[in-house]
Length: 233
Length: 238
Picture 1 (cartoon, helix red, strand yellow):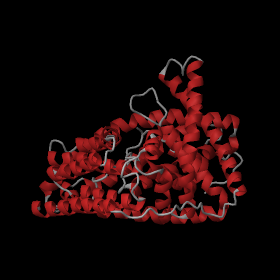
Picture 2: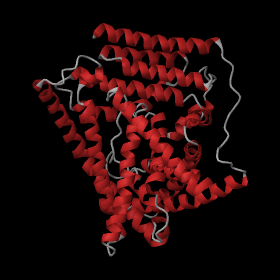
Picture 3: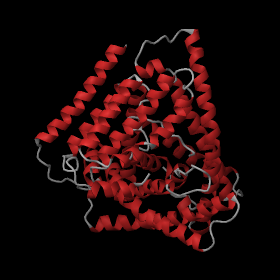
Picture 4: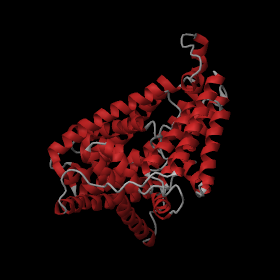
């Protein structure tokens, strides 16, 4: 996997509720903006993008246990607003089928949203700064960087909230105690080391696959990637 | 994730849970999920999980299949638990069982509810384009899955994806590219189809509500009792 879904029951309720609230606001803003700009065209567009992400996850890759998510590709094709809505729908279906936490749907969608938005920004930035760069390289750079940032974002969420079993299990909190903080730092470091070492392989796999995919589309239907400087937001 | 299997289980199953109103099943699953989150010791989380398994067995669900579906989040939870397994094994155990139990509650709901019923309820709380996108995404998934299957089959028939790992990944990337092109065309077709059918900004999906029966009240009471017990166990343990 190039992207780790947060499971249910790991994070304290206030963080989970905040994730849901922020996602709800972003969904409302994004869907209103998209409906105003695209009308009836928006629903099939985000639906197909969501389906594409779900289908890609089922592609059996020759690297054990890894699958692609295509969140960055979704950002490159659709821009951040439609991409975020598509990521939310994909995560909702995943959570209903026990592939991602239900209560943490908001946080998982936000982390996916980081990938979509950063992917879109990085793709545009690299294409603009280095116009002679091959589509493969530009997409691979965007994918690797966006996934790396989203993984660190996920680690930051866990570090800021889920690192303390007392908070998650609802027991006595001794936040100011130095020894307690030190006791929390060790498991968090282990967790970060495991996540980063496995995720780094995932970033490379997804960068290669999406790079090849984007180069293929760039050759046959460049307008899908905004070659004619079309829609973005 | 085997959406086709889940879809088949939901559409062709014939148990008392399949005949239960969607709202009741959603509430029951929500109560089990809440109990899972509230339970704070390995014993109490395991008890909640056992209660969910007992419900599935009592209503004649294919428990093994449900366990297989619910086992996937355990993989993710296991990575989270690794960090704490030495310093706080109880916390690590709770994380893993919670992930399984929550996944099981979700699996119990989605394998006994057709996607039309599930999505029509969920889409009520979603903005219009998002709710419609949810319905269309499910349909598009199966169409694109067929397309991807054909492309992968064609690659295999022509000698496979290549020898080196890099070549194979590139080939799979290009295979997905073919599916993306198909998806772009599908978007246009879907849009035109919706216009022909008089789409007015919202897909109507309501079905006549099933009447409540004694079993449905019993189901809700059972799940509420599990949640109450989990809350009580948490108060006693803290």
